[in-house]
Image (cartoon, rainbow, N blue to C red; front, top):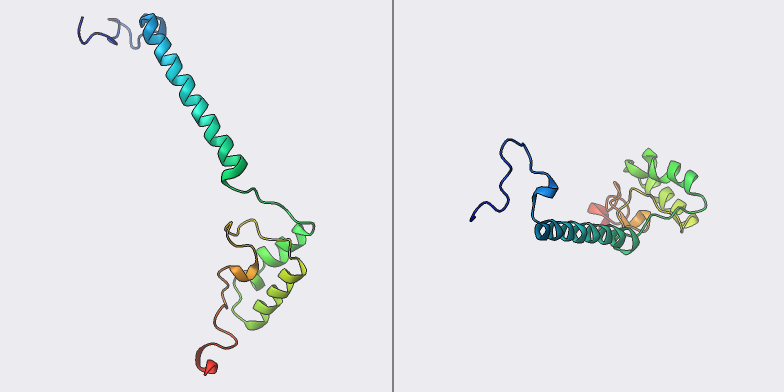
Length: 126
């Protein structure tokens, strides 16, 4: 009968899986298996090589407190703050904040609040 291929049995809310012809059940099972396999492979690729996992350094706990969570290295616009945080990064070259974008490897690579406002900037650069 044309158009009745997946019609529900009368009186039931949903047709049970066994109500479909065997060839349709096989096709559905294969599609579901293929989709699941692709999803698993995508997640595995993402976790393995798609995004590098954050690696903690030896002094990560103290580095997080001073560099990643302090006002001095996140919000302060004074030159002293910027140079102090740069010196801290030099002392802990292997450390980085987990919240930094993947491309930001050091404090100076990021969007520092005082960047470009101290030293040879503005009217004093002439």
